[in-house]
Amino acid sequence: MVSNPKVMMGKPVITGTRITVELILEKLAAGETIEQILEAHPHLTREAVLAALAFAKEALRADVVYPLVETPA
Image (cartoon, rainbow, N blue to C red; front, side, top):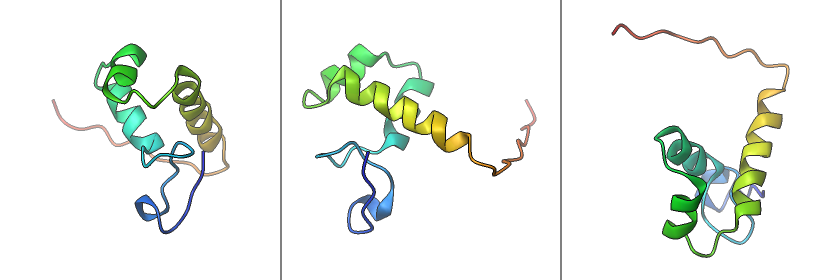
């Protein structure tokens, strides 16, 4: 992962692409499989998608607490 203020407003992206970690997480959360993501973005690798997940996991280990807000059903 790399972060450059001149690329995607500094959001972490897969190295050599403009595909953000955020986009990968959104796709997975929406129910897409890794295989579907790879089909939609043929220049990505399985390892890159897994690295994005590992990056997100480490980011959440920071000492910052994010309050969860429940939305009414």
